[in-house]
Amino acid sequence: MDLNHPIQNIRKMNPLIHNITNLVVANDVANTLLAIGASPIMALAVEEVEEVVTLADAVVLNLGTPTPQRIDSLLAAGKKANDLNVPVIFDPVGVGATHFRQTAAQQLLESVDFSVIRGNTAEIASLIGVHRQSKGVDALDSEELPVDIAERCARDLNCIVAISGVVDIVSDGHATYSIHNGDSLLGRITGSGCMLSGIIGAFLSNMASTDWLTATVKAHCAFGIAAEKAVASGVSGPGTFRAGLIDALADLTDDELTHNHRMEKINV
Image 1 (spheres, rainbow, N blue to C red):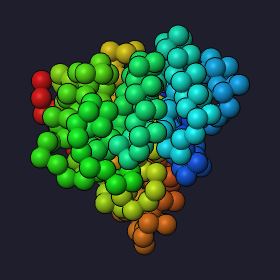
Image 2: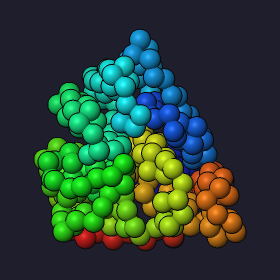
Image 3: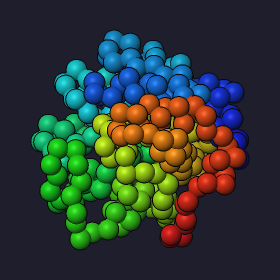
Image 4: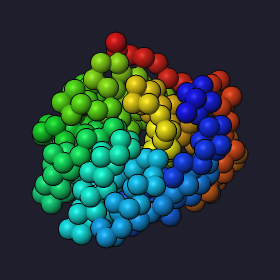
């Protein structure tokens, strides 16, 4: 994929993104992927996930609404993707909230090599054993900065880590970026982070591993710019924003990504 024209190339290549996502957001994740130009598949059954992965250009594993059977599917899909060198994105939804999710996340981290892990500050902190209070899937304030947590998690887990918030942070443990695109309405619809994880999968598809960091940063910028476009179109609240976000992703161009991104490198 051409890093200078990622959206154009997604639409040209129509990559298949395999999502094992949660029940709350599956429809929205599929629609945002369709809007950006990718082809989503949402196969859940452990009996077929390995076969589906053989067809996929990226795999997105989401810990939301977990069950023992779904965790088996996450493990099988992740391992198969590793065997085939297909990028794997992990969204550890609510990982700090219950022992069940924490145990499942630990099992996944021990069994699968992830390309990108994306979550909020509390979720990412939980993955590296930082003690932070978590209520539901929402992060709470802490003295440790998201930048520090992202960098440490990226080094500890040897992957790219993205922390979503008012300012998004993306790091590979060495280079770190802050992304300032987006709108507060993203926090008023369920599943915006899960949608972003799917978009990251589309941007990483058919991409060399050396380009994953840049692709992840651009995915964040694209999603944030789409949110800004949706608001500028005159939405009246969360409901119309949700529809407007999908429309904005469908209408987004590489020129807009180039000229409207608000991103800076904050560490080398």
